[in-house]
Image 1 (tube, one colour):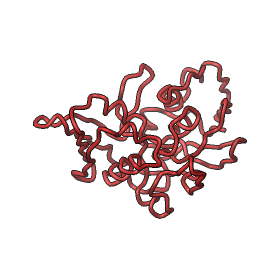
Image 2 (tube, rainbow, N blue to C red):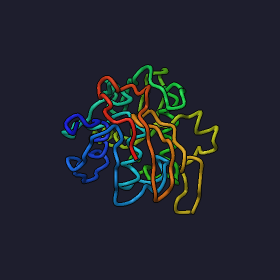
Image 3 (tube, rainbow, N blue to C red):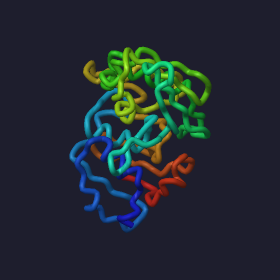
Amino acid sequence: MIKNINLTVRRTVLAAGTVFALCSFTVSAETLKWARAGDSLTLDPHAQNEGPTHTLAHQIYEGLLQRDMAGKIIPALATDWNPLPDNANVWRFNLRPNVTFHNGNAFNADDVVYSINRAKMPTSAMKELLTSVKEVRKVDDLTVDFETNGPNPLLVNNLTNLFMMDSDWTEENGVSAPQDIAGGETTFAASNTNGTGAFMLVSRAVDEKTVLKANPDYWGKDEFPLDISEIV
């Protein structure tokens, strides 16, 4: 079971930059008990950029790109990406079809444009990763263009850590801007989630216990089979 432990958990822990000895897990059942040095500061995926917060977010939310166990950038919610042949300042991303958020809403280009613009807002802890992004444009439902201020080879690297949110869910729940943690703000997105990732939030008691369950509709379950049905 150790060999086959859910690759999503393994790769996202590494992608979040957390030094974690996964081989120390003893997995004898479908529930993984995950003890960490500190709890997440928020569940808002754009409000904080620190280890425990980002690591948990990686289980629930996804970016357009991700890293594999060797650190190579591989597809996630985008299937391929390249600068336009006639304009190196514009990167085109083709999005993965038939992806849904945990509430059943379809993932599309509108969510990408919305998420990137949200992550650029003043209260976002992720805005530094997007300083070179001049504009994000929807080409069609499954195609998005990123225009930068100049050629930016680091764009794809930065996008591995920028999570996509459901624009409809975000607007409906009054969280169009990231939580202002420094200002002491508490928001719906700080304690509720709706991502596309391999795990879904079941319950959360801050500094005590967070329970996740496997997403039965996860787009990557055939590529990355889930050996874990619950994370506590």
